[in-house]
Length: 445
Ligand code: EPU
Image (cartoon, rainbow, N blue to C red; front, side, top):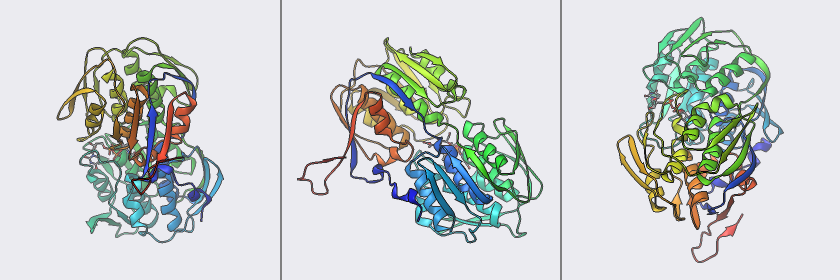
């Protein structure tokens, strides 16, 4: 069994909660981990490689642990080189379609379909789980696989896909919606297919480029990632190699949003500033100062926050995964701000929680109108999903008094060492484990 699995994030325990004493501005330096949404695609992509992949800068988060467990259960060789580097060798993986319970817990398990179809011409994967952000269809993934010669059906909650001819063939796929998951999944399926696949109206997020770079470094031929047309020429074989995952755009954005809301001055290190332009442009409008350096960003907020309007869109638009965290700052900005969610149907579940802390927000469909208040006050709240959970922590950092955030297992799916990093920049935050017996005291951990 891989040593990595001895690391089980504390947040996977539903009895753990975060306790935050708010009101301190943030000061110091924080270093950003590898990108979650790249890692959760690159780990399944290792299935396509005949040989060992050394992958660096893997974030220690529970979504990654789950995917590694799934590969382990399928017979992959997984070795821990150091805290964030793993050697993954899937050469001996021969069977597909077990570990359904693990697959069901994570959204990114859908990448196993593309990778298994490419490698074996057959895949059986549970319908994906992940954050509840409204309807999360996978029709565009299926459209791509079908165009490449796969037969796909969903039976008893399992996606069953197979290629009657044994090997996928290249195809032209025009995505009806710009989808990160469908773009990556079709790319994974296409790298070992016969002939050329063209994905049009492809998503352009930094992690799409990262997955393409990983595949190319293992011998694939993917061109155009980062534009809306990606061309993949199928190769017969990919062999092992070395790859380092890019820094997490959304983790970095979350710390920038925290400083925006709570005030202070923080150097956010190990980032690609260009990837953050779509976020920092909005934070500057809200009144912070941003200084881009080579691989870090200095953020300073000394003056009161200004209102701003946000519309979330695929990259390079403002990312939906930054909407709740930045909304906290808008709750404290002078004036009325309007947030329009352009990607997900159900991203506003955090609003009721922020209202408990004194925020004034009205939601109508995909639009939220936020009227800035003088201060938020600490309260018991829930992390409704990953980014909503991060927003609750940010709200707790700004609020007067104590905030307790429950259901933090959502947060630990996507943020490495969230508490440690926040404490490193001066936040008063710790986790406690609630006793199973209601009469006992919580245990500090
Ligand atoms: N869509 C379809 N059909 C499809 C696929 C998507 O209609 O087959 C729609 C969705 O309903 C949504 C839009 O297209 O309205 C975009 O969905 P997308 O496929 O881009 O989302 P995803 O791949 O399921 C990834 C991230 C999400 C992030 C979105 C958007 C991973 C594992 N997840 O999801 O990240 O919100 O892209 O950028 O990469 C997070 O990290 O907190 C998170 C939720």
